[in-house]
Amino acid sequence: MPIILRVPLTLVHDSEYHLALMQATRLSKNDCAIVISHTGTDVDTLAIAQALQENQVPMIIITSFPKSPLAAFGEVKFFSISEDFQYRSEALISLTSQIAINDCLYMLVAQYFGNKADQVLQGIRKTISKKHPK
Image 1 (tube, helix red, strand yellow):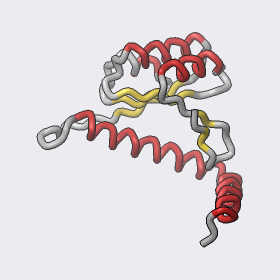
Image 2: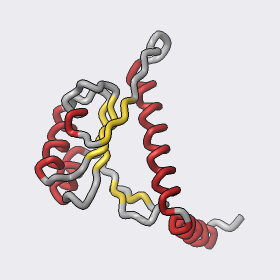
Image 3: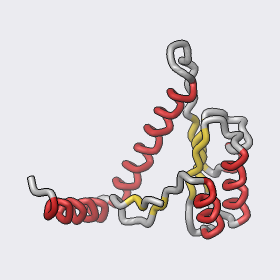
Image 4: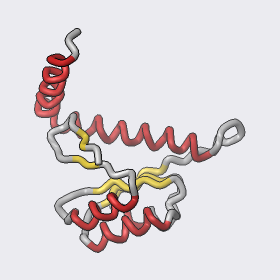
C-alpha cells in the first residue's frame, strides 16, 4: 500500500483487490477515490466502487468506455479512449492515456498546493540526498 509522498495530502494506492476493498470501506464522504478500469466492467473494480458509493465517497473514474457500469459511479469522469489499435492493443494505448491522466491530476494537485507541495518535495530531496549525495 504505497503512500504518495510529493503533495501535502494523505494519498494511498492499492493495486491488490482485497486491500483496495478494505480501504474503500474505511473512506468517507470527506475523502475522494480514483477508480481506474480500461473496460469499466471488471467485477472486482465494480465491487470497490459499490463499497465507495455506500460510504458516500466521491469518485473520479478513469475508463475507456463512457457507457460502462463503472462510469455511472463517477462524479468526475475521464475517458482514455483510443481507436488506434491497428498496431498495438487498445488496452495498452488506453493504459498510456490513463497514466497521462493520472500525471495531469497529480500536477493539478501540486499546482493547487503551490509552495506547500514544493516544501514537501524539498524535504524529501533533502532526506534522500543525505543517503545519496550528488
